[in-house]
Image (cartoon, rainbow, N blue to C red; front, side, top):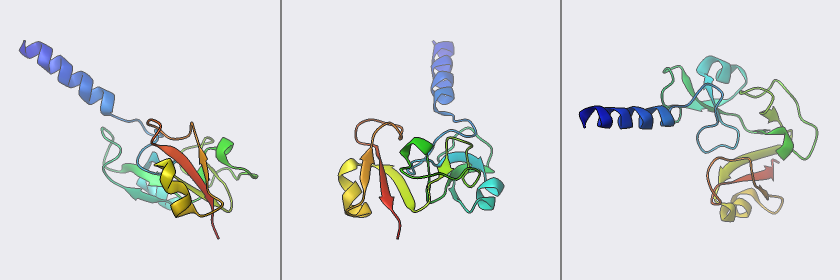
Length: 131
């Protein structure tokens, strides 16, 4: 029985661990990234959302970074952490959260998009124009 409990705990721990580059936190394209790389692209990093990774790998987000398919205009590569699925969308910002909060926080030009945030129906991408 003790061996079975240890196996179950091992599976739970493994399932919750993230890898470098995985999405994390509240931001639509926040990724687990080395803190030095995050700083170099002008991002903000925080601890606690990249379990199982070294202390110098934290959740990193940069305003304006999102999946290229979520950006309604031309994108710029190489300015965001996380590779080619996380690009700069000039003039826009985004976050993941409750779709009902999108227009309250993002204003009249806010758009709710599905398929870009982890989680269920209560966690959608809110994309909005930045003035």
